Every structure is written in structure tokens, then in C-alpha cells.
Image (cartoon, rainbow, N blue to C red; front, side, top):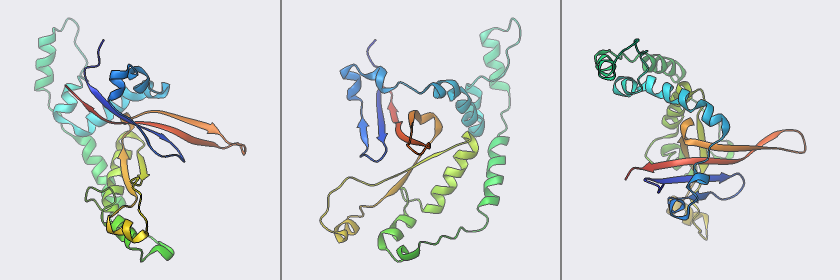
Length: 212
């Protein structure tokens, strides 16, 4: 069947530049390879969807259809019962209360000799290039970690060539953080090092899905 949506992925080979796999894969016939997932992903995705729907509550939780069906209940009867069932969002309240305790005291950080670096100050003020300071990004990541049980944070830097550090500073070319939730990490791989440790060397991330 032809691909009905465009998928934008990022395949990250650790210690190498980011390799982006875009919707052109659909046209090349590689869509199956592009969206192939890790076996643990397939086993856990339904749980992750349940967690985020429970956190969002309301309409998202209702459309998850987590109510148990009655024997001989018709589809329209079940849908009506779904629509009439209140979905009070207790999960979100619990996570927010827990998070408020963690961030009650402003975090302190020791950057050593980098303390006065202008690029560091820009990063602290806008850690994700979307206007959120570092504390806000970390708090958001903690929120997702409470929902899913884990959260991915990727530190990247634009691949732009400059001649001097002053040019980088002038163009605000610097590292930034991206938060990736569990359902968007499709595949990964670990390799065993000579010392016996396992090291992550590959990560496949879904950036976005655009419906037709």
C-alpha cells in the first residue's frame, strides 16, 4: 500500500553527526525499515499510551476506551457510557504535587571555570532554543519521567561552520537540549565494550508524523 503520511525520523549514531531520515523514505520504498521498532518498544507502547492518556485525562482518556465492556453491550451503548463517565484527572495532580516538592528549592549548579562563559549563560536562559530556561526544561523532563517511568534528553549542537568562537557567539550557535518521550524512541542498540560495559551506540527517534 502507498504511504499515506510523511514520517520524519532522526537516527543518532553516537559519537557521529546526526543522520536524519525524512519522508523521502516513503517514496524510496524504505518506509518499513524506517519505522521498524525494537522488540521492547512493541511490548511496551500500549502501556506508554495508557500512561500519557491517564495523565492528560478527559477526552484523551475517554478515547482510550479503558472501560470494561458489559456482556452483550452494543457499540453505541458502550460509546454512550464512555461519554457519560467522568474522567477526573487524579494522575496529573499527583505528579504535579510530587514535582512541586522536588523543585521547591531552586537548584544550584557549579560550572567551575565555565561560570562566566557567555555561551553558557545563553544556554541557561534558553536551553531548548524555544525560550525555556534550563530549570524549566529539567522540570518538564521530570514530569515526563514521572508519567512514563523514563525520559530521554538529547544534547545537540547545530552543524554550522564558523571561523571563530566569537562568530558562534554572535550567531548563537551553541548546544541545546531536546526532550524525547518514550513512544517516540522507536529503536536502539547497545554494544559491549572490551571492559565489559554496555554502551548505547544507536538511537532512532520519530520527530513528527504529518497526516495527509
